[in-house]
Image (cartoon, rainbow, N blue to C red; front, side, top):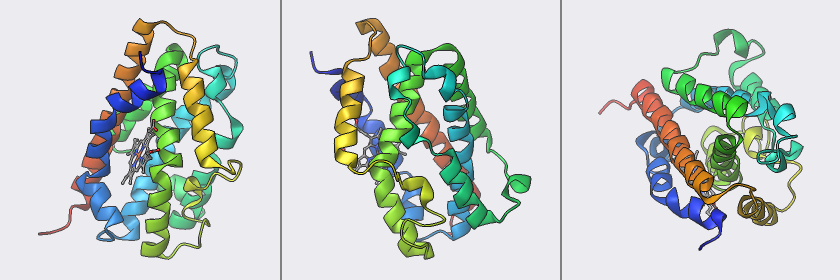
Length: 215
Ligand code: HEM
């Protein structure tokens, strides 16, 4: 049987394409939306990473989720710097989650509390994506809205502590392959990964509605 890292990647391939080519992402990366849409998207990410990272300390001791918890991945502080740049020092006072974001963050928080395998699915979907396609998004954002290269506004996409992302991703896949669960639980994790992609796509759909370009 294929290694787990291959199975999870293959199983989410189609949904990955869907997320990548969603109207909101295409418009954002195509330079057709203003910086306000980018800021609103960044705000939504804050809720997701708050849910992913709030219980990281506890999860670090878990045999299944623990190996994935690595300080170099943590994104919340970087998001907060970006939001300060994008929205100003009082960014928290106007921060709101879209209903789709609330649903996504609630699901992550629930997995973090109750189901380490499900948490791994969400961890994979976000962090490995940020390390991969995130770099394309950063490049486009810098060019489109004039952020300093790897500076305020795009710090979320900059992993200061990960010098070699390709090597890091190889190590991450080894962790996935070694996750200490049986085949049935692996299937459940894959299903949760698909759910994670669907939750992301729903957020894009909501953002598209908010920022839809007039025809
Ligand atoms: C325009 C948006 C996006 C672009 C351009 C993009 C692009 C990419 C690229 C180039 C890779 C590298 C594939 C490889 O390592 O060979 C990748 C991997 C990945 N992306 Fe995306 N992506 C986007 C959106 C997303 C979204 C929204 C998610 C989910 C939240 C996501 C999750 C992932 C994951 C989990 C991987 C790792 C796959 C693996 O190697 O197991 N991506 N993406």
